[in-house]
Length: 324
Ligand SMILES: [Zn+2]
Ligand SMILES: [Zn+2]
Image 1 (cartoon, helix red, strand yellow):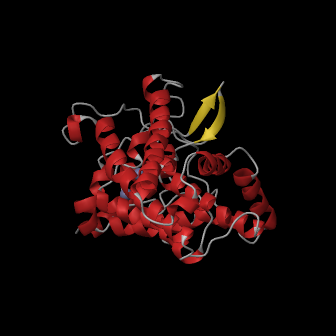
Image 2 (image 1 turned 90 degrees about the vertical axis):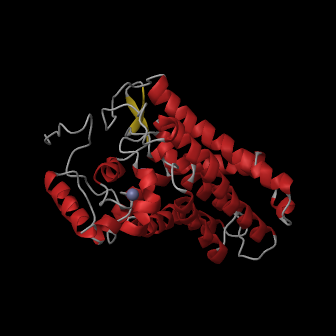
C-alpha cells in the first residue's frame, strides 16, 4: 500500500506512474492499449469529438458563410464559445462546489475557493476566474477560430474532410492533443521565465487551489500565446471538425483539467477523468510539471514532479536557481 501524504485531501498512488504512450513506444501492445483507452472508450477525447461534430452541424456558421469577415458570423461564433464555456465550466463548478455532487471525494486540495481575498479581482476567486475566462479568454479563442475559418473557406490553407481522406482525418484528431501538449509545454516553460512570470503568468498562479473556472483564468498575453496552438492548422491543414475539436480542447478542456477533482463519480464509479494530480502539483510547487501527464516532455527535460518529497526538494532548488 502506497504511503499517503497528509498535505493533500486526496492523491493517487505515489510516485506518479507514466500513462504516456511514449512510455513504451517500441511495444505495439502498449500503443494499442493507449489507443483503446483514449479513442475506443467513452473518454474525454471521444466526448469532445462528438461535441465538435454536433457544434459543427448545429451551432457554428457554415464554412461557406465565413469567406468574408462579417460581424454576424463572428458574433455567432463568439456566442457559441461563451455558451460553451458557461455550460461546461459552469456545470462543473455547480456540480462540485455548489451542489457538492461528491463532497470532497477525489478532491486533491482540502480548501474551498477563496473569498474575501484581495489577491483576486472582486476579492473572490471564482468571480476573478470567470472574468478572465469570459472576456479575454473567449474573445481571443474566438479570434483565432474566426481567422482559421476564413483561411479554410478561402482555401488559403490545406483543407481535408472525412470523405476525401478518412485516415488523415482520424490521424489529425489523434495528433491534436499530442501537438497541444508539446506546444503547451514550451509556451508554459517560457511563461515561467521570471520576466514573463512576474508580468503575465502569475495571474494564473494566484490559483493555488484550483477550480473549473481557473483553467482559462490567464493574462491576455498568456491567452495569446496559449491559443497560438491553433496556428498549426494554418500550415498543416484541418477540417472544421478538427478546428472545433482543438478549440474545445484549449477552451472548455482547460476547465475540465482544472476541476480540482480527479474524476467525476456517478454511483461511486469513475465515469469521466477530469483534473490530474500532475497539474495540481504544478499549481502548488510552480517550477515542475509544465506539460501534462500524457506526454513525456517533463520527464525528458528534467522538470517532472512525481509527488514525492524528494521531487518537492528538487523543485524548490530549481526555483531558487531561477530566481537567484
Ligand atoms: Zn493551470
Ligand atoms: Zn505555470
